[in-house]
Each structure stands twice: as C-alpha cells, then as structure tokens.
Image (cartoon, rainbow, N blue to C red; front, top):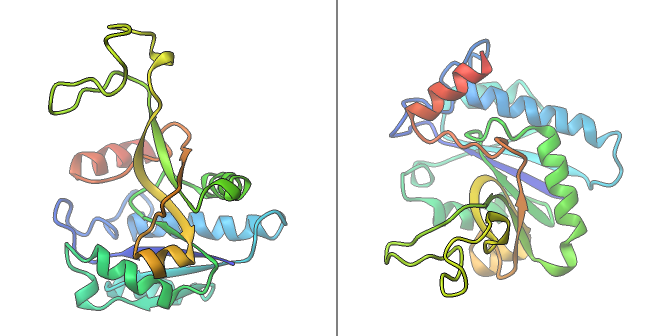
Length: 227
C-alpha cells in the first residue's frame, strides 16, 4: 500500500491563510483543489491495476480543513499538534509520519503544488515503481537545462576548460527539487528520519506541473492562470 501524506498548516508567513485562501470558485482554495486532484486519482485507481492500494492522510491544525476533511470519509484526518505546526518542525513531523501512515511506501505531497494533478501523480508513481530496483526513494524534479554558477563564481553546469559555452543539451544533468512529491520506503522514515534515502531518483515533472506557491506573487500568478 502507498500512503499519501498531505501536511496542511493553518498559519503561513509569506501569504496569510495560504492553504485555505479562496481562489476563484474554490472557497477553501489550494486545499480544496488538491483534495479534488486526489479524489480523481482515487477514481483512476479503480480502473488501473498497475497501482497498489492507497490511503490518503491529511495532517492539519486548521479547523476549516478538519471540517472539510470530515465531509470526505475516504480521507483520514491527523490532528496536528502545535509542536508539529511551527515554522521549523519538519524533522519532528518526519518522525511522526510512519506512526500515522500504514503503507509500505509514503508519498509526501503539498497543497501548494496545485498544478500537480491526478495524472501527474499517476505518472510519478508508475515511474517510481518502474525504477524501484535501482532506487530507494524518488522526488518530483525540474531539469536545470541552463548555465549554472555557484557562489564561488565557479560553473557547475559544465567544464569551462573543455568548452566555455557548450550547447545546452551538452551541459551536465542537474535536477532541482520542486517539492510537488516525495516518495520513499517506509523504512527510510523509521531508520533515517528523512523523506528521501541514499539513492533518490529524480522524476522530471511536466512543464509547469511542479510550480510551487511560495509567496504572494506566486499566489496571484496562479489565481490569474486559473481564472
């Protein structure tokens, strides 16, 4: 079984009530949009036997979200404590997750990735299962296909001693985490206290699907795109 774990914190610093702020017709905003994606994924599972059984867990300290989750009995609710809802509680929450989730694999996802829909999850899972023999975990990624310089003014995208400006298709393959999805064996959580293991596999997201809403500019951009 695969456990979907979706943490939804009430307070957010950059955008007030980011997870529940109304967007267009969605009164509960990003939370409502994400739960709609998961509901559609659940319906896809009924027709596709390539994917194992799944459970969906919402972990929240927000009363609005709790009330909405209770209207959807296929969702499991985890009442998130104050200690697990602070700005710097990720390590504590990771330790708590295997106590909440029953699956052999745990897929951690966020409501702040509203473009990562049911088809993205399906493709992500199929790609992970296809590569399970060579990895212990995977993450949704963006391929960095451009020239990259570090803070020491050194190029990390290519070797300038060989060629100063190579073709972009010849650059080193670099991957950035877009945070739309992380998946790992349950044992990674219990033994390593992490969402990714020693052999993480980057799964490239389709264009824009990994878009993450971090600040008000992102929120406004997505709202304009949706409307």
